[in-house]
Structure formats: structure tokens, C-alpha cells
Length: 347
Ligand code: NAI
Image 1 (tube, rainbow, N blue to C red):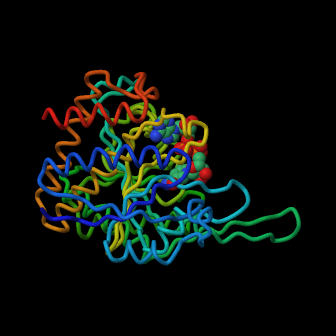
Image 2 (cartoon, rainbow, N blue to C red; image 1 turned 120 degrees about the vertical axis):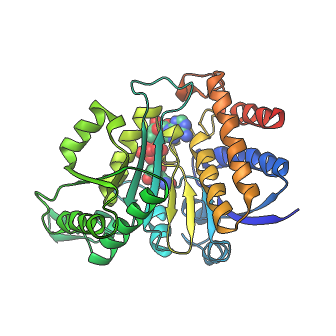
């Protein structure tokens, strides 16, 4: 039986409990598909500091470089003070410029919206997340929004290529180029150019983001692929999570040209940490994205089989009302993982 090594960062808050739940599910699915995964625990952020290590230890960097993928739980970032976000640091360290966040209506999860199937593609390295802030004079502070031709072109190319490969019909850029004429203007123009030259087969639309958010809330099913700069992508991902059941059900992946890190959209949820109530589904769905990615990268069909089995198992659970409390069910984190495993074993 082949074994694939995968570094895993459990993260903070609910991170360790949802990670434990997800690994137990993936292990069962892998064994049933005739493969196995060797998880390599590594630390980052608060978890690393608590172990007396630096924020992003060299071993964590080395293992991710060696294995080219990682599964990551949420990491806490102090608000308004303290260390810089380890999430942003990791994305920058590996140049993971494309964040992909699929938002899909789920069976058995009733919300105000049906038929939502949006993929958010977020530029992950620039914009207001440049981290360049300074005090101009006492009482006046400034944050720098950065946009470069290379990065805008790169993410636009990535988004259209993704849409084309997945048979998606439309890419919509949300921007504020009416106000930020240079930065958002560059982002918009690059997308327009990539569309015109390389992907005229895909419909291209753009909307000013404030009106775009209104349109999203009115009818999210009119959107297909959304392409956004860093901050807008962050905010709109959480907004869209609300269409399909909340932050507990939206996965994510951060891709570079070489490495990829898979993580849920949500954070470390300190308000529910350690209570066995967190929904592990978003991280589980991120693991499914990782397995499908590995199936392509390693040319290992067993990983695709594993991903399909897990997806069928959790869809079955949701349809049968076996859900965590955020989705209106009554299962705790562990009980939900056990329910998914039962279905995997039956299947
Ligand atoms: P959050 O996403 O952690 O929580 C927002 C709300 O959603 C909370 O009420 C929480 O209980 C609920 N929630 C989140 N995930 C859930 C799950 N799996 N199941 C059930 N309910 C869930 O956002 P918040 O509170 O603003 O941030 C907490 C910390 O997480 C901060 O330090 C922030 O910087 C960090 N963060 C980390 C991210 C990452 O590691 N990629 C992403 C977003 C935030």
C-alpha cells in the first residue's frame, strides 16, 4: 500500500478538534480506497509560539516545501496589536497567490437561497494585505494598497484557466475602480485583457463591489466565478458562506505555482473552542479539495476515489439530518465525524 506524507497544522481555538475529526475520517476513507496518508504534525502561529518556537518555524517551511501540500486548521491573529497574521505570512512565504473558495448549496441544509454554486477566486498576496502601515503624524495612520501588473495578470490568468478547465461559463470581477482608479483599475484591466486575448469563450462581467454585493444578496445563483482582490475576496467569501449555511461549510485552498495549502474559510472561533460543537465540515471539504488535487498532481486515482467517498458520506449525513448545531442539528464535532465514518464503512 502506498503512503503519501502530508504536513498538517492543527491551528488554534477549534483547530485541534476539527483537525482530529477530519484526519480520522480521511484515514478511514484512504484505507478503504487502498491507500494511506502519513500526517506530519507541524506548528505555526500561536501554536508555534506556545511550543517556544518562532512564528513560522523552519521545519514547518521545510516539510511543506518537501511535500508540496499541507492541510491547515485556523490560526488566531491578535486584533489591533501583536504578531502579524500567520495565515498571510504562510501565503506570502510560499507565494500562494490564488485562493479558491467554492460556495455550494448543500443537500439537507435549508437556507434562504437555493442553487448557489459560486467559486470565489481571491488574489492572495497584495492589496491592503501588503501589511505596509505607518503613522504619518500623531493621529493620522496610513495603510498601503498595492497592486502590481504581474500579480493582477497572474491571478486573472489563473481564474480564467480555472473557469475554462472546470467548464464554468462566467467570470465576474468585483472592484471599486471608480474610486481606486489605479489599483482596482489595474486589477480590472488585467482581467479584461486576459478575457479578450485568451478566453473569449467565457462570459466576462464586472461590477462595482457595493452594487455587486446587493446583487449577490438578491440572487446569488446569477453568479458563477467571482474574481476579487485580496480584501474584497476575504469579505465576500464570508458573505457568500451565509448563503449556504455559514462558515462551517465553506472550504478553501491557497495555490502557488509549486505548493498548495488547504484550509477552511473560517477562523479559530474562540467562542466555541474546546466545547465539541464546532462543525468540521469546512475543513473536511478542504481535505476533499486536497485529495482531488493530489489525484491530479500525483496521478493517483485512489485519492479521487477517497474524495468522492467522503463527499458522498457527508452529503448522506446532511440529508439524513445528521448535522452539527450550526446547521440546525444536534451532533457534536466527534459525533458528526463518527456519523461520516459509519457511512464510509457502510458504503
Ligand atoms: P471565525 O470564523 O473564527 O468565527 C466567526 C463566527 O463563526 C463565530 O461565531 C464562530 O463560532 C462561527 N464559526 C466559525 N467556524 C465555525 C465552525 N467550524 N463551526 C461552527 N461555527 C463556526 O472568525 P473570528 O471570530 O472573527 O476570528 C477568530 C480568529 O480566527 C481571529 O484570530 C482571526 O484572525 C482568525 N482567523 C483565521 C483564519 C485562518 O486561519 N484562515 C481565517 C479567519 C479568521
